[in-house]
Length: 531
Image 1 (cartoon, rainbow, N blue to C red):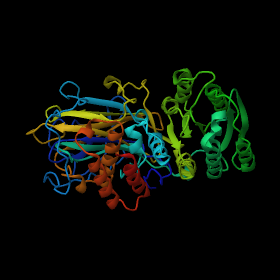
Image 2: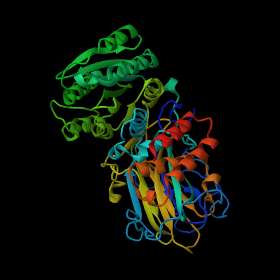
Image 3: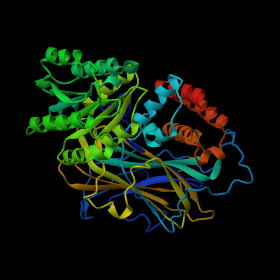
Image 4: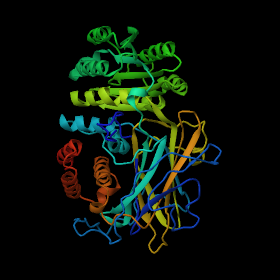
């Protein structure tokens, strides 16, 4: 099964972790519980392997595996790159870098959402202004294919890195978390409750037509033994389809055809009825999910995320996950839908056309029913003897207090089968520092049996690519994506790297990944969106 965000059965690339590091080279290893800071400069083997511990920290066997690291020779920055020169008045270290001597840990809940990128794509395609507040780097990165090797069970973690082109003493490091694949044919049957926004705003910009097309795709993609119910909400909420086996596709398609935009928007009532229906459908041995399709506008009942989130959080803890699907470029509440999915331990996507509807509802949704890792959190530790500063790029609203990493009462993120998760860091290395592991990434989650598992990997200075041309093409891809979000939000990289640098890197990436249509489309969007 492919790990492509669009081709694998889950249809997601779930959270990616990229760290910019400033040694001449970096290589990754992982461990079954030993501390890589002891015996610095050694690795368990020449590649990577996963280590796992139980919830009490005691070692336990793991069948997991991690992605192979792509090392490059320690030869310095490639002369092929046209490196922008920073003006003399720019400070050597910009704001936002954390000093590991005072705070060596970075902790966050995993995130597999992709809605921010497709929302951006839709805005650019229709000539709309991109709202910087809706740009979430991790969701841009999640959208694209990664190249992490799937573990045999649970979640695996890997790290690779390259020199940051415009700051040779910094590195771009990627920590990828990948879940095991699950055979679609052997998954448990599912009960889905579709909660559909039927308010007046759904008349605009083809929102209801897009919704119906997406739901029809879903109806043809589920198993005959899956069950579907549907709630339609406007000023009030009503049951539009009682729980029905998918083998009766005529009844399901008929209910979809009858969906009609009405008046006000009471999202709270729709979700409350949807969760009541989902709770009544729960059956031993089956999975239960709620799927909300909406433009996120709420003007009746509770109209803020805070007024709706408590009930959703309770249901998520009982195992009913929420998928929020956004539609419509105009009159759209990105914040509400993204936060609902986070609280519902689910996934937020945005559908901007027929192709995306097919991707999400034909493969993404049906392949994302099996949760491989619950309450998954990542913690990344930097060695202050080797690292002068670091910066997490993205995950701003997924931060977790460092001391809560091993507190299983604190909510994390859910990772579905076959997904990848990537996040971005920039790291400045200390000049003249000794060799050895300078970053350790640990993922902690509950497996399908409810047992707490930890797996980790670390990075040293022997295999870091001297430039992006010698790194994994997907690491180069994540660099381009991070550069794009930085310019859209006027981030710190914009003062060092020009728009032309971004365009040149995008063209270089497109030539390497010429068979990936998503990268081709990215190149077009960069040309159109970056002045």
